[in-house]
Length: 263
Image 1 (cartoon, rainbow, N blue to C red):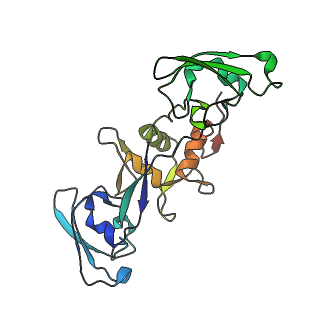
Image 2: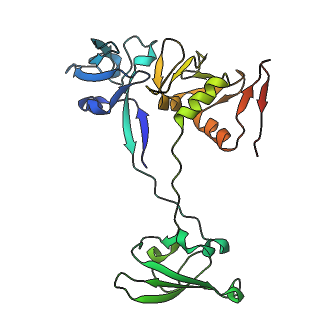
Image 3: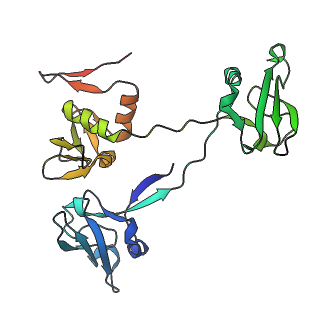
């Protein structure tokens, strides 16, 4: 799965408004006009037309790099959303245990060849270089047997016939659950490192949360830092790792910070 990358626009980016959005606002950009005579990022030479939450049309002035003309109000900075190409799967060498379940094994770049049977010659493990016999069916229906190393390297065939584990996709991020947990644990969040606020309300129908006058879509939490005591700060990916390890801090009724490890 590809992931989104947010970056400041250059001159060419303004030609495709479908990839443009505000830093922390769901207002839709409907039009852009770039002054043909501009001085790089030193002049607010881009007029942006947006639709506000009440349906009215509003225009704002921006620099070529997307910053709002009143630079202190960074919520209205314009960003480019790029889709990054999905990373190629990095397969780890097989272990002895991996050979026990052929349903999780496949050829690196020849998935149309079907693995039928595997025999690990136990007396050869650690002694002979190719202790695994693999029987597979070719795309023409023929059955072949080739010996492999424990790591999945073939004895006679080219690299793309190496055997690898089928990688299971990462589960989707539960943004709603994260927002709810942050709200009930009284965490403070920030997107600028200056103003921190708790989550005041959560709307599960519109998939939005509020930290005062500003509302965000659930997945915008990716751009926030998180703290439970104003001393230790977690980037979103660090917080995800804490959740994965069941080590998310909580705050009791007396304001004490606790980190529990669930079994």
